[in-house]
Image (tube, rainbow over all chains, first blue to last red; front, side, top):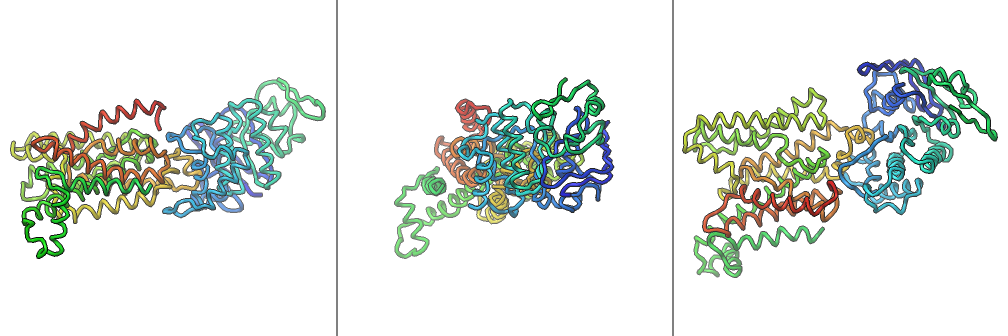
Amino acid sequence: MSVSVRGLFLTRGDFQLKIEGLEFPSGKLTSIVGPNGAGKTTLLMCLGGLLAVPRNRVFVQGRDIASLKDAERARLVASVPQEHNPTFNYSVLDFVVMGRAAHLPLFSLPSGEDVRAAEEALDFVRLRTFALRPYFELSSGERRLILIARALVQRADILLLDEPTTFLDPKHEMEIMELARRLAAERGQTVLLTLHNLDMAVKYSDSMVFMKGGGVFASGRPREVLSDDLLEAVYEVKMRIVDFDGRKLILR
Amino acid sequence: MGLAFALPVAVFIISLNIGSYPISPRTLIKVILSVFSPSSYPDVPAALRDIVFQIRLPRLLLAVAVGASLSVSGASLQALFKNPLVNEYILGISSGSAFGAAVSLVFLGKGFPPQVAAFVFGIAAVIAVLIIARSAGSHIVALLLTGIIVSAFFSALLALVEFFASPYALQALFYWLMGNLSLATWRDLALSVPLMAAGVILLVLLRWRLNVLSMSDQEAKALGVSVRREKVLVIVGCTLATASATAVTGIIGWIGLVVPHLVRMTAGVDNRRVVPLSASLGASFLLAADALTRSLASFEIPLGIFTSLIGIPFFLFLLKRSRRVWL
């Protein structure tokens, strides 16, 4: 297991995260779903080392995340933020190359090799031709892809994406989900993402985690764990799952 | 890039000719050569040599160091604060230094150089900002607000010292506050330039890191940057450069805002270019501004007043031209 949680109890204001034990399968795409305020983003931040956690609670590649230095951690796990409003209008390439920070000593500049890594990542998200475009000119869908490319050049095995498809049109939404699947399937990366669109989660995920009230409500392979009762218990709305051409669709 | 570094050299050479006693280029060459072989240039008067080597040369070298220091600090802090409108004095250096200079001039008298106290209190202001902001988690907004608060505090103390000062000490203080290079001596240079150079070199070494630090703190952390540690390192560089510059010249405003903006508008926002180009353009800008203060009027216009007077309309022009919200 490349990511695991053992007894993580955390209080942030009124909110409490309480996870007794949770493991994410390596090389798979796992969606974390649940209502607003369930703790999805908080969990993701703990897994990415962006929120301080006590020792021996969160492990990435078998190592305690609380004992890792920032650069060490960033070489194991990359976090893609949900929102992003930079002040300065860097070029796409300058932006993506920042993902090499964890691999470069403090006083050094990115080398030609680092630039090539950035270009490869742009190839992977199919935006190579955008390298010299200013970041401010990109659409929000393109920005998400560039953020993912930046995380890819970190060369971390674990990739965390916080609501990567929110506010995107169906085409870009599918593009991002396809990309996440390719990362797991082609590169064997462990991809964890939070999601609100259940149909997308069911269609693309190898595994799903349902969260509610700061804890894990259920988890497992989508086809096995999913049921009308589970959805109603988690979201407090009546939903029905129907089979359509061998696919599961969720009706509200 | 290469051309950009020829600019300060050219401005430097032109500036050497300019002053209340203009020296033609031909005479200047003779004066310089006369140092190496006095016997072949017997017609060069010693007074001319003194003007060039004891007055003009240290003054221009100081202009180079101060212009580069203030501009590089401004550019670095703008990246660090993720805000193109902060300047090199945002962490309270100018008001700390002003208070230090005031205390020195008013209570220690003329015999004691105000530079020492100005430097010490400039740094003290930044340390106070860092300590106070630490209790709020050293967030950028906390640093910004604490900078404003500490500046206000030192300004109040400055007013208090001014209230008790004799008219004579007040006059010396006001002259210091206006900012000028005219009193530059080789001794000032020997004491301050190494500190300015250390700060500027540190920031130049960190120039790519500044790109990453200009992302949100959380993003920079996710990218593997030890944000708090590297933030302090940038602040140390800016403080060394700005406090030592301010201590010898007084407060010279607007350079740290205008120069990096001009650089970003012409060369893009990548700090790998912005930082070194700000050094070069900042040096040229202050050399040119100083040459103008020496030649525009029959008296010498205080440099700090002059840079503000040309900096503000210039900045307004940049704002209008850039159109896009912020570069």
